[in-house]
Length: 143
Image (cartoon, rainbow, N blue to C red; front, side):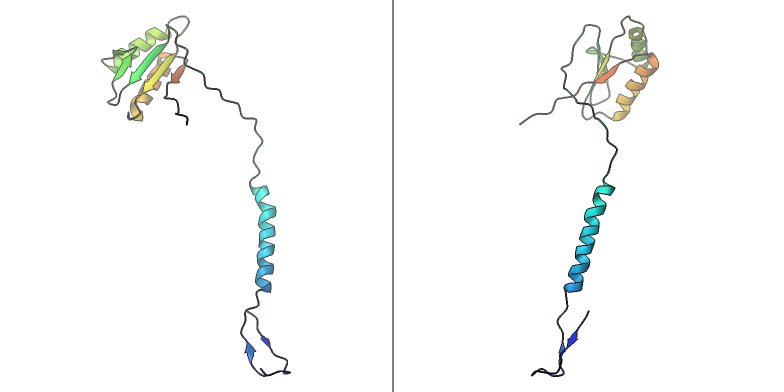
């Protein structure tokens, strides 16, 4: 903080001026602003990557596709039929993996189902030899 003392040629002889000199504060703030304007583009520089364009494709239902539905309680349905156990599901997956051409597995999971059940189905499909696994979701509402 700086202060100035009068030069002695007036009515206010000997009084100290107590106003704050803001000029150095403004100078420092402008210098900081210029530094930030120069360094921000350097910090936000990222690797240039050509991202793919996404198009929404409707599900193509083929008769050989497998639809696995998992309800909120974790029950698994193979093409609308309830699968009684995980062993039965493993057998169904192994039989489907042997077909030529190999069918795609479409998983429809309830929004409230624990991820544990979905993860088990994916691992069983991978171990059983299914090459293509897809998830069926509800499209977003527009408007």
